Image (cartoon, rainbow, N blue to C red; front, side):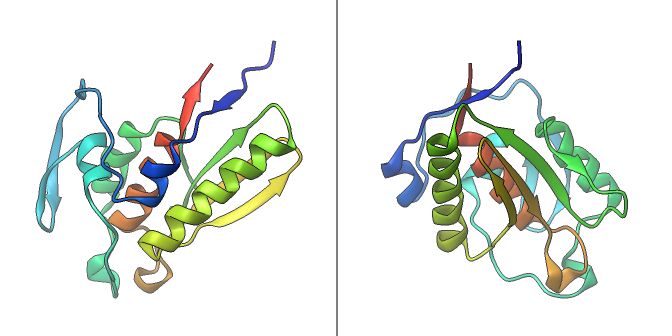
Length: 152
């Protein structure tokens, strides 16, 4: 049996400041990101994207690896320039509901993913062009996209 993702959207959460009740994280990791000493899913969800420019605003390989541990369904591209995840759904309606929710997050955060959409799947890819790779913004938005779902 194919494992599909069920979509549960909390529209007030999608369009508000994302104040969602969170389960306490089981893993706390620490490394240096400006203004952020502990990185957890809760910490990512509490952040908002901000303008980041230049190579110095990008994440190190260690920081990327640490963030990816928190988002195990997300994968690093071969060139380490983007993170991606393919989401699958039962039908087109649920796929488009997810796409619209991701678009709402992108608009609110002013950080836009590349999306590939088909009948029952959506490939989401994040990178930060202004830093030439990955920034904290990519992981903030990936965590928000992940938070839209409940796996059935």
